[in-house]
Length: 453
Ligand code: TYD
Ligand code: MG
Image 1: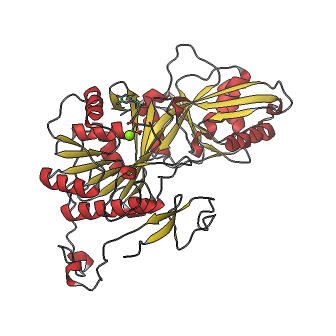
Image 2 (image 1 turned 90 degrees about the vertical axis):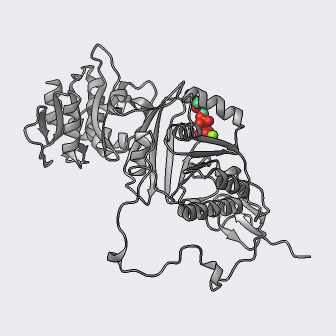
Image 3 (image 1 turned 180 degrees about the vertical axis):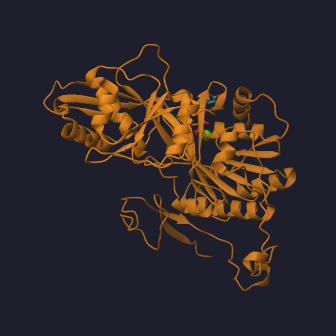
């Protein structure tokens, strides 16, 4: 009897071991190593002639290679197209990761329903009826979308051959199972095998494949960092489940920039593209309220106006509280220290709460000045005019530093009807004749004088 071949895999990072051990020596996690049965087909030698697949490849001079852009399939979803770098590339494999319940299935089903080409949506998680119910909420009719509930890769390929889809969607890679491997679905060796089968399918048939991948509690795509290396594009769908906004970003993209970002709003009838994100991130209140300031930031290549809210109050307990939502608390402490030292504000005896509206997280240093303005406004209880915005970084010496791509920020602020923008005096600005008033400042004191007299 043939001996059953097994190997040991860390379920956290995917490292393979020859024997069991308590701690993974690669990622240092405990109790993550599991024995999996790997019963592969005979591996063919790389020399064997039938190893060469349909396309044989020989070296070409780089300028002999056909460099014409491959036709991309554009979906009806502009945000999705932009994040991918202009559409879905034929033969590409895309992995979409995200926490459970964030809306991955909704997003891909919605895209599948809107696509002008034939799509096969394979689900191992929901029944055809459940998917139909969801589809009815999103987009009632589509001629081109086929739904298959299946988890065995060999069967999926068989169906794909019959239907011959232009795009294949897999929900999710963790539910798939390949006959060539014995271990259970969701294990490292299964995920690896199924993904490589799907990649082979994509490359040989030219059909783009989009995979959904679950992420673990610490935010990695479950099982496999290895998965991220294998696929062409890794997208992440994120957001706060309690907020309606969702952000789609590319973590890796072989066919485009990773700086692009898509914003969606989760509604009763699926996800709505948000084409002007600044509008949703700035709350509309009629009276002027103290403690809010607007920052011109960049998310990826896109300028974005966000509202910063601060609340400064007298500390009740000995140690003042510092609490932030969507902003780094260490950065807040640093800015408070700068304010204390350079502008003479006694913030040591005050609680400071900071909130970025819309449930998004920002780490662009260009919002520093708006953070400081919001804190000072709350501290003084003097509102900042609603048509003022800020784009500058604060240095440890209290100096106001230039930020990158300031022109783009100025133009966005102008487009949205802001009257004044505060930027660093040292920023090189090349916008010609801006309608918006530029306040060039170099020290915090200048800003205080301008805002609060
Ligand atoms: P889902 O796509 O199932 O998440 P994932 O596949 O990432 O686990 O999304 C589930 C959530 O989306 C669910 O909590 C309900 C919400 N939702 C809406 O608010 N509106 C809708 O039209 C749909 C289809 C879902
Ligand atoms: Mg799902």
